[in-house]
Length: 282
Ligand SMILES: Nc1ncnc2c1ncn2[C@@H]1O[C@H](COP(=O)(O)OP(=O)(O)O)[C@@H](O)[C@H]1O
Ligand SMILES: [Mg+2]
Image (cartoon, rainbow, N blue to C red; front, side):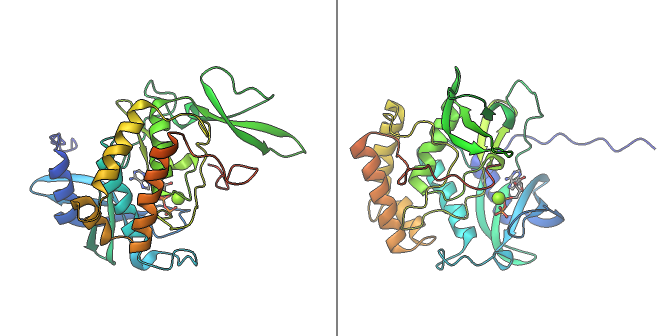
């Protein structure tokens, strides 16, 4: 018997996608292996449309001593809110909702571009190279031990999408930007995922994207950060929404990070001698 023809899904607006994620019927199809928290691969269906998504129930979160308040799911939604406010669309649509295992975050599943595709794959974003020079089109992060007493230079692409993500990470104080959290999607878009360890009031920036450390921000980033500062003013709608997701101290620290970026006009530099990078980096 021939397989039933798949009805092509129509393209949904951003608001329609959020409604689908928040109100659609959520069905768990599988579990992503190797994740540090419960990460469930699901479908979500609403008014004849279906999409795949991840659902991370709060009940499946590993408690972290340095993130005692709120939930990782709330932080993931807050990161999405900031990404939307920048207009850069770097975080897939993300909502808080009830699901089969209680409250959690639900995020659109991003089908990564296949390896070697023209849209770029993860290998075109990060590399280890011999010698001391990153090479044309690459930015140096630092030296890494690669076994047998050898070191190699960890580099990332000098890519404007990554540069925006580096700014977003500085703003949200991302403690875990590793290679596996960079998803190049068909059509040339790049998404960042896994934003549970963010918004701490203390400096927690741990990232692979140190290549621009200390360099001037792009004019575009400066303009975006200026608007973001206004959006974060007490009483502004974004600040009010974030107030339900992170603590007042974390919201103040967020404002202070944005203000510091605007004041210095530069990408942040590592606080120690060595740049803080997540381990393992991929
Ligand atoms: N929105 C998404 N689109 C596509 N893949 C995803 C998405 N979210 C998570 N994944 C996949 O699931 C894995 C585990 O998710 P992650 O957010 O890293 O969970 P954890 O919080 O446990 O580290 C990711 O490395 C990625 O392969
Ligand atoms: Mg992860």
